[in-house]
Image (cartoon, rainbow, N blue to C red; front, side, top):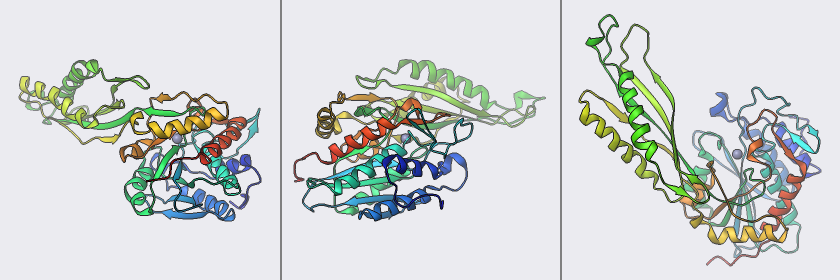
Length: 394
Ligand SMILES: [Zn+2]
């Protein structure tokens, strides 16, 4: 990494330096995570600008990096969040780490999702520290493992935030939203359902009980009696969704299978109670058990990322929208179908809005890119938010 400068000359250079450091999510690549290298680089840049930095360990993962600037202990705190990890780079048609500039666009993995938001936030913060008017205290969280487990943000909210001595009045989650304020998004739940049969040699199938046959029944029942009847919806994020997307079962062609499993994905809408999902599915399974005494089926616990409910961020989103208004940009609140780290904050009662340069349509693509104009505009928007006068924390 010797080619990387310790102090970039421009916002574009900062983003290109960040793209040059490979940070493919460890859980996605199966290799060791490398967000630590990017954290080291950002630490150096922030340190040169006189900002305070702190590494915050995440159990079983690499460290989150927190960058802070306190102007007055009595002032409100604002927090910007940008994840350091990216999705995989296999099959990309541009150099994933080249930061190549063509047609006013910067190319590379993370250019859009979401190193641009981190670069813009850090650049704006460096500008902010040089401005005469500093009505807020500022922090940027560079988080680990967003793309798979969201463990970095979750651990920050549950473990670090209560120990920092301040609570953010508002949080901006940096993800590509075309610089539109996303105030609501759906939640995600994932879990597994197993059926247990009895194995036997295929020359005598009646000696066994097929877990695959049981699962066929389970899938049919869930699709017709549960998924088809989902009706929860939210005006900003649409209908609740559920789908069965992975099935595994059997070991060998001449053995009656004693195990089969499916993986389900459920999208909850703001206001829906995630804790009610599995019990509702369990009722469907109970109906099956009543008609088939041999059926052995069980559900695992679910991995849950809650929805972002706009009722948790009303006041804060009006300030964010005010900043967009002052810059003459569209400020109507929008909803998203994907999940973000905003959920962790919302769940803890901390107002969070998702806002960042670039479109989610360019995220995770084989030629990921970001318009340089969007990047420059994002740093203006973020700086305007940083300068917003908020009520003093009570
Ligand atoms: Zn992202």
